[in-house]
Length: 127
Picture 1: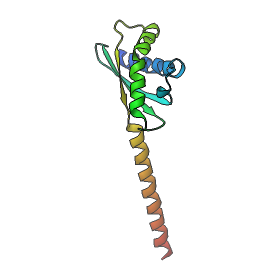
Picture 2: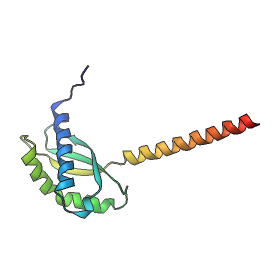
Picture 3: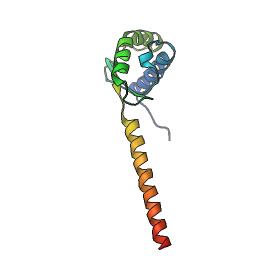
């Protein structure tokens, strides 16, 4: 059975795709390089959009990235208006998404526990 998406979810996904392409190809600010847009949450009236991003550098240089994104937000919003046809173009609010880092850290912890458990079972089998 196909999963249905609301119009706001489709618009948010289109905004995410278009912004990702604009940032990658059009934004020349070096502070904004090496980021990935993970999600966009849009208000029901389309007035505001929270744009979540991660960086390859993690939280290092996060303040500079946010300054660069905020500085480029007018340009991004204008270009977005040319690509996405909606009545109200949302104001963009950029927010760092730490969930990827937390997930990676959790995965490392699980791997450590599994290795320790395997070593413990191996020691028990040898005794």
